[in-house]
Amino acid sequence: MLLGNLRRDLPADRLVDDPDVVAGYVHDEAEWAPRGKPDVVVRPRSAEEVQTVVRACLAHGTPLVTRGAGTGLSGGANAVDGCVLLSTELMTAVREIDESERLAVVEPGVVNDDLRAACADRGLWYPPDPASSSWSTIGGNVATNAGGLCCVKYGVTRDYVLGMQVVTGTGELVRLGRRTAKGVAGYDLAGLMVGSEGTLGVVTEVTVKLRPLRDPEHTVAGYFSSIIDAGRAVAAVADAGITPSALELVDRHCLAAVDAWKNMGLSVEADIVLLGRTDAPGPAGEQEADRMLACFEQGGATWAARSTDQEEADALFAARRLAYPALERLGPLLTEDVCVPKVAVPEMLARIEAAATRHDTRIANIAHAGDGNLHPLLSTPPGDDAARERAQEAFHDIIRDALELGGTVTGEHGVGLLKKDGLGSELDGEVVAMHRAVKTALDPHGILNPGKVIPDRPGPR
Image (cartoon, rainbow, N blue to C red; front, top):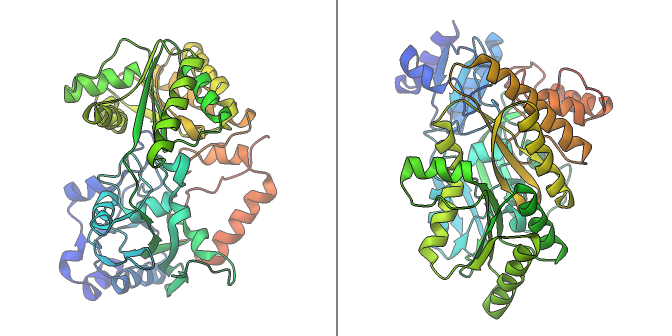
């Protein structure tokens, strides 16, 4: 009956029910997260078509899971059994770029880098830059409140969302937020939608604020013999009062995997590489780069230098972005996304190393080290169930350690399915109840991405 209604009310090419094609939509990049089997994939082209899908699901009590490009790393876009899976991939219009107001209006299927390129043509810049920026979409970035390499200085997606158009859990098409530079009228419902992972509404349009294009960045690279020394250098940068435009950590496992895949010639004689950038204009940028270099040396770098070769510097940062897919080629990956106070970065890195030893698990490390957002990548050989169990134990230990150090279970990937139990440990029972109350108010029939984000129960503190 539901499929009949969708076929009646939507153009024929919007529906996909070929099992082989549907199989490509059932999960995101969180390989270890559970996934179900959708009844159909729908690819609308307009907000009104999205509204049609939501209303059909309401009429039949059918779960609705929304996804963008499927680059998520927490299982938030994974199908549940019997659901309609709504893909925003055909909603790709950049509707407006307003140079005077410094804002853009886009559909949710616009790829992050495509928006950035369109803005650059107007002398403007959209800062959020997840490592998947070349294929992740703005709608998915909004759903998970994505961060990226430059968020240490410029913030995450929520800091740039002014407003949006949303189909609610009751099937209404509404506008939230504003277009003005300031606005404090009523509750921040647009902000509430950012990071809600499709559990409160389906985003059909996003208005984001923009910044002027930046000056060229200065790059500093440092090699370290231990992850703990690199952590000390990160702490030294923070203690010096420097706010870099990027401060990234990559270990030799990641560089070797990228090299084996892309043959970039980047493997180095160091256990850890720390990459820093500053975009301060003019002489201030030169001075800040020199101060960052001194912090690397203070932290114990075996070699450190300011890059004079922009191509080489860009290649190092490209390797950082390619680290996850490069390691994924070698076997199943369980990806962490903990965030700790900057002062706790050395201790947290030491605890990750200890977890790897304790559970006999190979853990590669990449990190947005400048803001304490660490991404340990737990790797297991294909088909090795015992190794998988050990990795899961290490995964839970890392979450526990991050919370003990005053951190959080996710800095930018979202909760999805993988971090539900961790969020239960992070939040008081009263706060979990508040989450449930908001979900019930905005999705009273419980059809929107059910079973995601909200813990089943709060865990021990």
